[in-house]
Image (cartoon, rainbow over all chains, first blue to last red; front, side):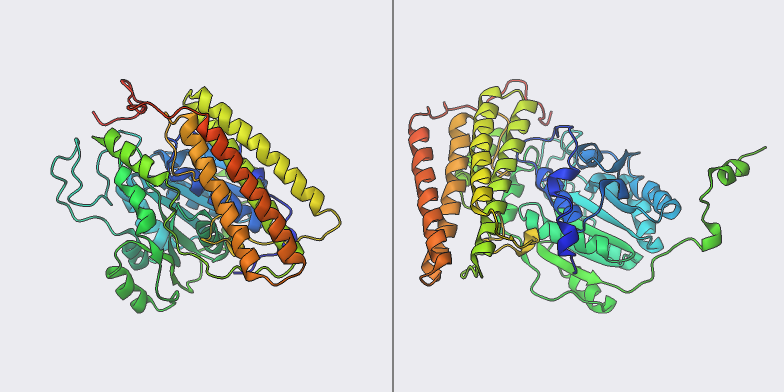
Length: 279
Length: 194
């Protein structure tokens, strides 16, 4: 990954933080993901007004409020759809989508598939804590089948959704996994994802210390993926299908050309847009 | 049940084990490189304490927030001192993931994951002690691995300063009452499964 050293000093990570104080539970992994995002922006020397952060609903979807870039705290599960529209109409912006596993893979599951398929140039960071934290701890699509809790006695018994496999099968061009306990490593993954053309998907394991205190142990379980990133989709599929969910790093980097509107489809004049709505 | 697990985990994690892979060799190339590391370390330590103070303020834990504010102020003085030391030296720009920290993370930044909205000043000082010890380890390792010369001399000086900080925090900790049993009991927690 290339970083322009001189330009990178134009902004510090702190320059991207808004004055709004996060209301996450102390100890939540999302704090360090916020830090990783700002570090990545600073290293890429992205001016705050050149970035839009789009989210859905949930704890991690509060992210746009804590950043001083453009932002849109959108509709539950619809963040990638919103971001797709934005990127197609404003290809000059760097578009980052943030959210959680419930927002992205359950309510937003269908949008997730088609965002991967369309391969519009944006980066989707999912803070996966395998639980619906904001609504008090219901199991999410990525929750382990035997997670026993007051709201799922004995566990759901359901096979967890595998977002990385789904992303690969659906056409995502860059697939990586980070861990909130490794903020510098995660910053690198996010910067790499932003620089890679097309739809980039970064799953960040981000413990929910309130409803999943057992996830604090992830720091002793995660490890760098023992293999180099691959461009071979078959090899990536085999790796991801046998992955235990704890390998960190870039796991797939494709060469699909991102989807863009043809030049004549891009409307840059507000009057042209208004014209289309004239009765 | 969840609260008792948090209690056990918080107490065990406050032993300052971060469970990450360790760099056996810290390859510092010049005094400017070392100062760039020190500047990043002190800056991130200051910012982390500011963040932790904000977190405690949001949760109306003013006593611990105040302590984190004090720590942030102390670290801001360290940042100023580093900048003074670096005056006239062109510090290299290093991306966050390319610093040669022992375990990949800025050593002097307090562990953000080892916090709780009801944590006491005693817990906060234990976090600070862990951070200072990691900084001490970092410079100790550079001293041990560098040959006589300017890098070795500067690292020795910084190691001695961190040693002083460790002792100061220890003394502060000794004067700060330990939390009562059940410090994390909250009859009306902000988030709890019902």
